[in-house]
Length: 422
Image 1 (cartoon, helix red, strand yellow):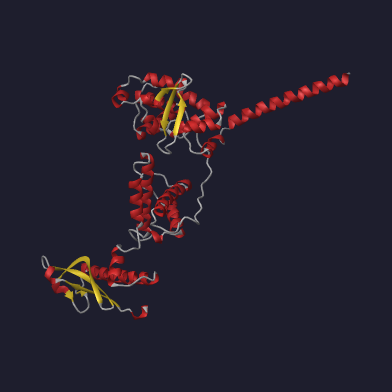
Image 2 (tube, rainbow, N blue to C red):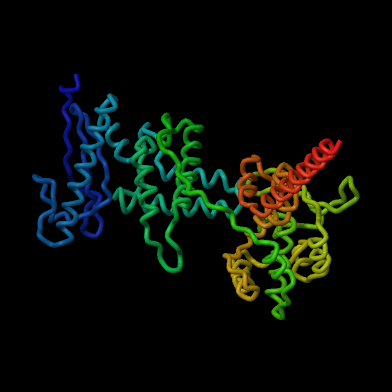
């Protein structure tokens, strides 16, 4: 039945809509004698239009480009016709026009999904996480433009090859300016964010199949950085004459003894510090990232910092507990602090949270379940990443075991000697 369908495409101008001596060009789609017109958003001087050929007369460069565009439109319309045939859908002039304009029932596009996801999640995700999604969005758009030579694709065009090529593009991408190339783990995080967007499309029933089914994330195992007790002590005891460095150090140390992230320290208000059942001060809050509630005791060193800045103008003006610089400034000042304290590590604010998990808590025998609760982790597996790197704690535990075994052996040897002496 489909072989009897007649299909044709032609171009013409509408002179009665001419302005400034130029007429708009239209494509006419004809299927089985029924036709529909499509504006291609281009104009031409009507005396240059060749009605018989449906092209523009002349050899100027702009005319050649216009004729090339007409041919591109023709090919796209033929492709829309073929798509409808492959999908075994009813072929009409209107259906082909709708497919060309992206208005048919084929569904949503990748760009529509990305923009919808970021709009839907803006009130649920912390600003830092949102920025990561915006970066993934930029990489997706770059990949479409540079590797797929298109501005957008339909969601049903997503497949394993698209994802694999997208990850490969990110890894090979040469960044501009001071940015560093994306690492393997960074590329996997971008793929992970794209997958979350795709999962949203599946929930919304915009997509039937999951293109990530065959895709396996491959993260490189890396130990979480943290400050050793000596490094932490050097930073704590260092005297700074520059006020901004002294203030940044204090806020950093506060995080080392509470495990709060930058956003949580920045948003900390007096109401978050409450008296617990034990009569001591605790910080009660909710993680911006996971929405998990957490409770952290206000350790003496953290309490001293709170008291130090109780009447600070910046903190009081904003109704906050501590005067915190912007994230960018804070991390820049931490680089100076690391240099002055001879700490040869990439000192970032997030390193304070790692230090709380390792040096301050796990290394001092705090159970991992308690640490997980204080950090606001949704899974104990997340906290176990820190436990793997606490070598000093492992060494101390083994020393204690060795001492107990040695003492037990001495007792057995003593009893054996006494029995033999009888």
